[in-house]
Length: 98
Image 1 (cartoon, rainbow, N blue to C red):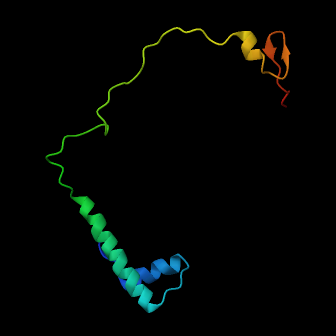
Image 2: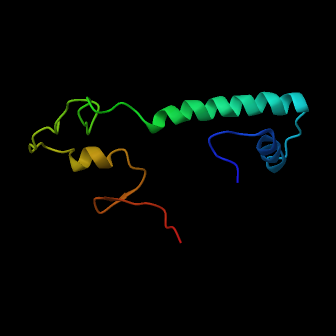
Image 3: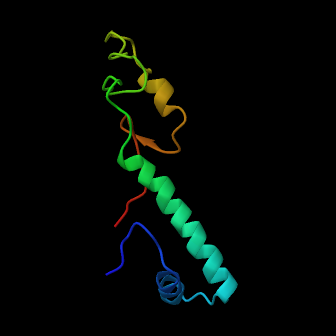
């Protein structure tokens, strides 16, 4: 089996066939070269230099930025019901859904 670190012309032709793409011999050559360069670039991610970097859990230096809970008055019932199309016994009446 062929190494996954390089792409041969045969593999490029197989990928084109699986993708149902017709390629000329010049395109096969071009795409084989491009795929190999992509694999070289991705290979650089296999051994990153991380020894000097401190581990991070979040990109920003934030800690729970929550506000304190406080009791506030809500909307008055009459004000909330004033925009409803239909009200019955202090509640909004919605259409029946079956």
